[in-house]
Image 1 (cartoon, rainbow, N blue to C red):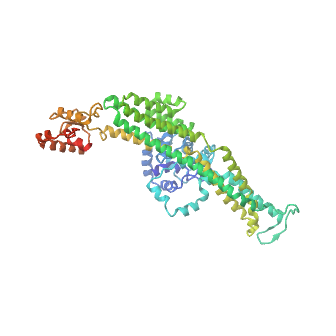
Image 2: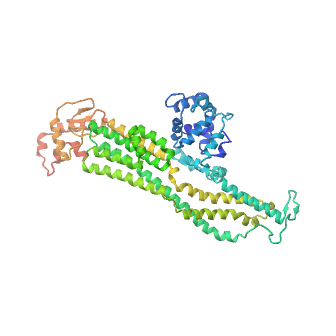
Length: 554
């Protein structure tokens, strides 16, 4: 999977013109991409053919998007098109193998100005957000706990996405610090490179130096700390709540599919309803993702909706004012058509209600930011604090040559203080950095479809004497079991899908072997038991009249 992600990332990493100007590709991808750059042509052909799903010999925008989605990194259609325009040298709108191979050549003439210009439209911080949709596996956690992380994080301090997104603010702060140093050289004098001191070029009796006492900054420091702590804690709480909500959505969607496997009837109509419900359940998180991501996700969602629900239903969903609610109504209608037992229907309806509740909670987080008066006050406070910081640092840096250490000190302080505020701002709206694609495609759709296919294969099929349907609720289980067994004892049956097991039990032909062996063992035990002994047993509940497998089951 990392190899797939590197295919598109490597088109960006080898070109120094592009990388500093726009997006910071995750560091974990860089060595993989560099490895792919040095890959043999035969290996590249195999990777290209695997990525070329339709076998057309070219990579289209959807195939390129799926390459990124393989590693749970989603790009907007604008970004995907920008990458294609960068690699596509012949202008046919797709990526051929030669263009694909050229993207991995460090000496390639593929330019990146067009891609950089396209991605600058939204700024570096917005472009970087898709690359923060991280899903961890075992290897990722091992690297996360590695003792080498300290050196790695220290060396790459100024390559972080937060630092890149603050380039404009840090440029202003560094320029202010440079101005303070140069202005004080003019007002108070300076020392040249040979150590010779020179008098002030423009001495002013009323303004001896551009400095401020450090005491006000010391007093304001705790207040600024409280503001930043509250800002980041509140933003993280919103992120954590959003992730918790999507975890609940994953569980609820799986429960709906599991309940449909157990509750829906076994006839052809019930099987059709099961399939419909599976597709509708898989469409719900995609509809919610489309709502939370905005118009840029519409083409992706529309294509997914057509594949799952058909063109007519997809058009109806796209024209709906609230797409997730529309899908919930589809789920409710499917459950209603199944004509279930009232208690079973109530359980499934309860899960559908939960999806609506989670939708409302996500809407609340998305539409209600942290109070703007607090956000603006924090931003203004920290901006003025960092901007005037070099005036207080100039005197403290007197031991350095012409107080030049004021400039890097101001830059470092501004990087971390502004970085904390930027961190809170980035996670305040969590749905842009949460891996919603991995949740909706991998954790929900693939699992729901897997449960559905497993049911078709008989892994979850019921084993009920005399019928493949659940025991009727109108009779007690032991009475129905005894009656069904007595009617079918000694009979033989097979219709290609079900067969008669020992003891007169109808089971699926694809049922696991341990189930059939259990029935065979119980049948042998019952056949060897004495008839007079069974008649001599008396009980108030009559459970001794039931087959032994039922007693074990209960």
